[in-house]
Image 1 (cartoon, rainbow, N blue to C red):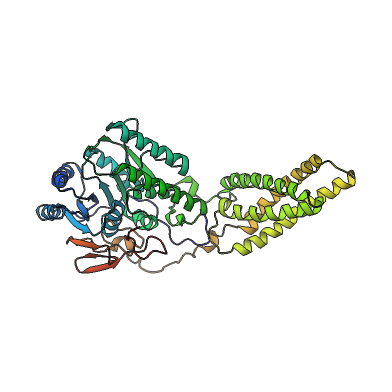
Image 2: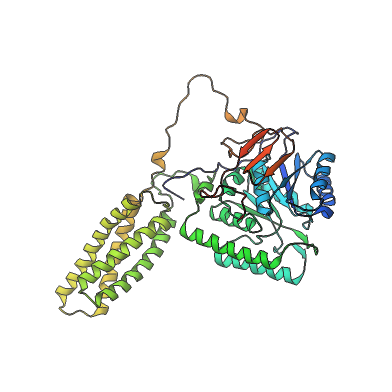
Length: 490
C-alpha cells in the first residue's frame, strides 16, 4: 500500500533468537475482575502446565481490573509464592484497557492472554504461540467455531457467538472465525504499533484489534480449541452485544473514510517472489487495473446519469462538459484513494489539477465524437448519442489510466530510498550483537520499559496516564491523536 507519508513499518518476520533463562519468552496475562474464587487454582494450574510443557522461560501476569473483593490480596500472595507470577492493579475496569497496559509494559517478545476460568484446554497454548516464536505469524487466536473444535456451552451463547461472527463477515469482511474467544497471542513488535490504533478498552478490544490487523495484511493464525463454558460467567451478554455492534459500526465507518493509518502496519514479505525486483515489471499493476475498472465503471454510470439530467436543460455539448467535469473530479478522488492508495490531504489539490488536465483530454475526445456525430446526422437519437459517448469514454479511460499511473500518481518509493553507504575498514559491531535478548533490529515503542531483567512489581494508575515499574516511569502514547488518556473512560 503506497501513501504520501509512511510513519513507520514493521520489519520482516524473524524467528526469535535464543536468550538466557532469566528472560521470559512468553507473558501470559490473566485479566480478572472479582475473581477471588477462581484466581489461585487457575494460576497454579497454568504455572504447572507451562513448567511441564513449555520449553522457554515464561511469566504469568495477573491484571486486576479494579476488583472490589479479595482478588488483589490473592494476586499479591501468588506473586510472593511463585517466581514466575507477577501482578498489578488497574484503577479502572476494562479487559482491553488491562491488556493494552500490560502488553505495553512487558518485555517478553510474545504476549498472550486467557480468561481466568481457563475455559480453553491448555494443550492449545503451545500451538497458539509457536507460529509467533517462529516468525510465521503476527497474531494467533483460538477458535471455538472450527470444525475440529470441541465445545460445551449453551445454545444461547452458541447462537450469539455465531451470529456475531456472521455480522463481522458480512459488514467488515472479516475472515477470522472467532473474534471473542478469550485465548489470543500477539508478537510484541506488532503490539507496539497496532495497539495505539485500537480505541476500545472493553470487550470489543479483541475484535477491533483483529479487524485492523487483518485489513493491514498481518498474518493471523487460528488454533482449534476445546472449550467448556463457565456457567458462572459475569459477562452481561446483552450489553456486550450492544457495545460490540456499536464498535462494528464505528470501525466500518473509519475503514470506509480511510481515517485509520493502517500503513503503519505494513510488513515486507521477506523471501517471497512477490517482493523481488524484476526489470520492466511494474508492481501492483493487476490490482490497480481491477480497482481502476471498478471505479471507471461506476464513474461512467454516474456520468451518463448526469448527462441525461443536464441534457434536459441544455444542449449536448454543455451537458457533456458539465457531466464530464463533475464525474472527473469524483473519479480522480476515488482513484486517488482506492486505486493508487494515496491517503491524507497532502498533494490533493495538485492531484485534482492534474486530473482536470486528464479531464480536458477526455473532453476533447468525447466532444469531438459528438461533433462528428452531428456532422453525420443533423438530429441524432438520444440512444445514438449515448452509444457514441460510451465508445469515446472507453478510449479516454485507457488513456486516463496510463496518465494516472505515470504522471498523476507515480510510485516514487524507489526514488526515495537512501543510497547505500560503503564502510571501509573493520566492520563495526551490528545492532543485533549489542541488543538485549529477544530485541529486534528496530526501535521499540517508547512506552515499553527497556530493562528486561527488572521483575519488580508494578502498578498502573489509570488517572495519572503513567505506568510505573520500580523507579522507572514512562508515558504511554495516546490511542488516537486527539486523546490524552489511552486508558480513560469512554
